[in-house]
Amino acid sequence: MCRHSPPCPSDSATDRQAARVSVARHEQGWALLCNDVLLFEDTGQLLPDGQVVAPCRSDAAGRVA
Image (tube, rainbow, N blue to C red; front, side, top):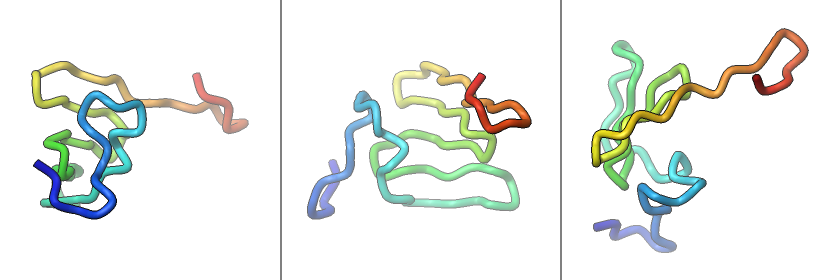
């Protein structure tokens, strides 16, 4: 349960990666967010229910692939 004001987005929200970082292990390439989402440096995500969200990749021109 988030105690921030305003509250962090839930793990099911489209902007879930905007939640505050609870624990970060930059040397390992991940951060645990307040909403229990595991965010990886390649922008991939692991949700609390085990669902994997693929990394958001962009091409050399900056377009999202």
